[in-house]
Image (cartoon, rainbow, N blue to C red; front, side, top):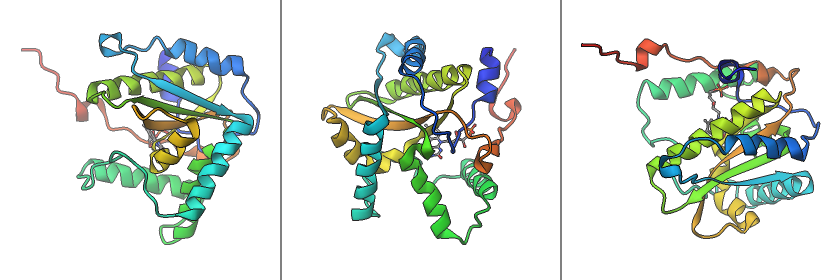
Length: 223
Ligand SMILES: Cc1cc2nc3c(=O)[nH]c(=O)nc-3n(C[C@H](O)[C@H](O)[C@H](O)COP(=O)(O)O)c2cc1C
């Protein structure tokens, strides 16, 4: 698979097969992704990988935390601006609606929508969960560089026939996750990622999100 194919074929996969992923394969993905660029070569990323019983313990821990306090919000940063304006607001709305349409869940079926959201905290059934964190001293630049690293992980995973879903949803339980990993206070959790083999029979994985054209976000200047 060439780079262009990996970029265009990678999607957010939200249903996985139980089939485990070999440790050597996970290691190999990270071993390639570490060549992602970062300003000043800071390589600001830290990664925690959970599989097997560790993954299940984390899922159970977070599930209990949610049951104990369903409305707790442990996020340390806003995932979206509180008053997200257009065109971004519409884009967010449209992809969400398109996703629930694949699942056959209408807008007024809130319990079913919440149940699907909660699948985030089971990695959508993926056998591997990754968490990306970075030092609290880091600024916007280093956060952007971590994003490059995460996309590299997703692309190398795609090259290896694996599927991913990046998961900012975990930030709602950031403190619980940080405690689980015994994360140093200097470290801030940014994002989770589900990794595994896609369940191609699952309707939710039929979603293909759209993109605006190059003209909509690019200004070409030549004189
Ligand atoms: C940093 C990041 C965090 C995301 N967090 C979540 C998440 O918590 N749950 C989820 O279902 N999708 C999540 N997504 C997936 C986006 O909704 C998805 O990338 C977008 O709709 C485009 O679709 P595509 O990835 O299939 O191309 C996240 C994506 C990124 C890049």
